Length: 425
Ligand code: C2E
Ligand code: MG
Ligand code: MG
Image (cartoon, rainbow, N blue to C red):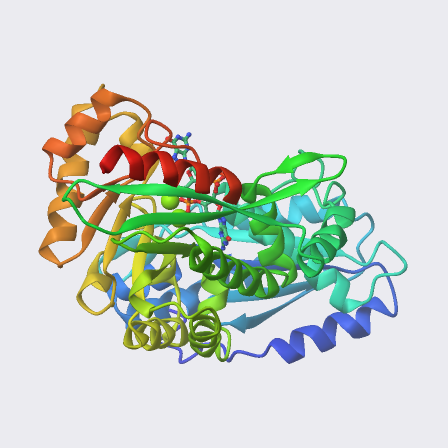
C-alpha cells in the first residue's frame, strides 16, 4: 500500500517545525534541513494533483524512514519539508545529512504504473554560531537552498565557494544603503524594430557603481536583493527612474517606450499594480509606453497571486514580456491563459544560431509560437551582422544586442538618440 492509500498526506505545519527547532536550539547543537521538491509545480501541471499528492506522501515517508540520528520531519509548505536534527556532534555532519536525503530519491517513485524520478534542493544550517536564533538559522538554510536551486544542484557544500561563510553580509547592507541613497544607475539598451515600428524601444538595466569594487553587475546584486527583500525598493526605484528618464528624452515624433525588468517577487507583493499605476501618473507616461519584462519561470512557477497581478497590470494597458524565453520549462500550457504581449528569445539560443542547425530550428519554433499567440518576438544578444540578417529573415520582430548598441548611461543615450534621429531623417 502506498503512503497516500494509507491516508497519510502530511499536513502543512511550518509553525511546529520552527517551534521544535527553537526548543532544541536552547539545549544543544542542533541542525535543520529544508528540502524542496524540484519542479513540483510543473509535476502538478503535467501529471495532475493526485500524482502530486502521492509524491508528497511518498517523499515524506522516505524522509521519516531515513536513519538520521534523532530527527523530526515536518511538512512546511506545499512542496517543502523541514527536518530538525538534534544532538548534532559537528555542524559539518549536516552536509552528510543533506547527501543522505538527496540519495533517498535516487530510486524512482512508483505511482500507479508510472515510475517517477524526483529530485530535491536542500538547504541546511545549525546554531553553531552562538548568536544565532532560529530566524537566523532558517534564513541561512534558505540562502543555501536558493543557491542550490540557482546552480541546479541538490545541495551546495559550505566550503565549495558558494558558501554561507562567503555570503557577503557587507555587500548586503551596502546595497540597501545604495538603493536608499539613489546610488544605483539605470542603463538603456535599444530594441530595434524590423517592422518599421515608429516607436523607439529601450530596455532599462540596473547598474551599481560601487566605490571600491567598480561597476557591480545586476547578475550579482539582483539575486542578493531578492534574498534580502531589497528587491522591493529596488524595483520601485527602477520603475520611477525609467519613467522619469523617458519623460525627459528629447521629443521624438514617433515616441518612446521603455521596458523595466521585474522580479517575480514583485508580482506577489500586495499593491504592485497600484505602484505601477501611480508611477505612470507621476511621470505622465501612457501605460502603452511601458513594458514589464518577467522571466519565463515566473509564468509557470508562481501561484495565483502573481497571475492575478499580471492580469491587473495588463488591464492598466501595460505590455507584458516573457524574458529569457526557452530557458525555463518545457510545459507551455501557460500560454493559453497568460496575458503576455512579447516573447524574448534567450541569448543562449542566439549565440549558436550560425553554427547549430538545432538552435536555428528552435528559434524558428519560438518565433512561430510567439506569433501564433499574437506576441511580438524579440531576439536578445545579437553580436554580429550575420546573426542579425538570419534573424531578420526568420521573421523576428525586434533585435537587441551589442551589435546594434550596448546598454548605455542616460547621458550616452541622449547622444545616441541625436545621432540615430539624424540618420533616420
Ligand atoms: P535580461 O533582462 O535578460 O537583460 C539582458 C542582458 O543581456 C543584459 O545584461 C544585457 O546587458 C545583456 N546583453 C544584451 N545584449 C547582449 C549581447 O549582444 N551580448 C551579450 N553578451 N550580452 C548582451 P545585464 O545588464 O548584466 O542584466 C542581467 C540581468 O539582470 C537582466 O537580464 C535582468 O534579468 C536582470 N536585471 C537587470 N536590471 C534589472 C532590474 O532593474 N530589475 C530586475 N528585477 N532585474 C534586472
Ligand atoms: Mg530583460
Ligand atoms: Mg533576457
